[in-house]
Image 1 (cartoon, helix red, strand yellow):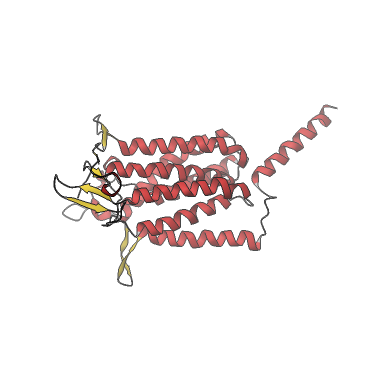
Image 2 (tube, helix red, strand yellow):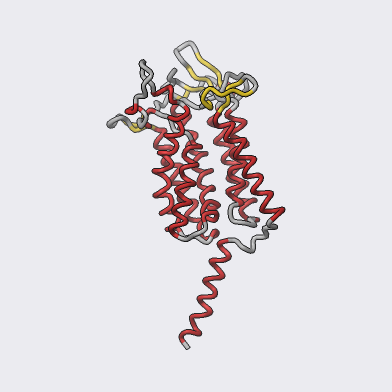
Length: 306
């Protein structure tokens, strides 16, 4: 059922006030939706933040811009493929065949963040190899922008009246009006995830990154933090992607919960390995190697002139 232009209210917080802005911002062509505008704004703010942080990781602003120019299109493709793969039945016709022409209609909705993140990281890895820069330093810088983009982008779900949770009577419940007299009160899971990402960004910027002891530490924190939050929030949602028809303890397996659990365990293992086995102390950070190389070149320059 579509709620694309349903009035929204938060009766426990704002009484009878209703939000009635439609999901479509402009009627041009297929339409320009607030969803796309908000996601684009999140990307741009995330990019700007990462550009300003780049020198702390031994990178240049150009490194960040060039990476993003490659990552964004492939991330969108990855997010769509992930969604289509696990919601394949939505794209089948009455005869059971797949309507391939509808699989690329992203303006109708249907992007999965995990697919975008996976595709984005693979693209960034290939780019870093080609430019001979540290992938992990690049990732550590860029995950800050990911937090920003996701925190803002979730408000696109709000404008689309999607990605909400199960019924609830909590004071901060979100009310979707399905008609003038009928409504449903649900968890505003888009808001939960947005706030979770904001908290993650603050912890990453003010705590984790300032005590970084190895390239990839920020990345570990991002995946562990986001994975924990997503595992919890996904359990509240009513529009989850499911792992085909597989079940566990009689319940269908939600793709994002399964992936979140694996992600948390893997990246926590990497964190423990770096601290306990490799005894990471920050001495081998890419930014320090870049600084040492620059200092060596400056020292060698006067000798060459003599």
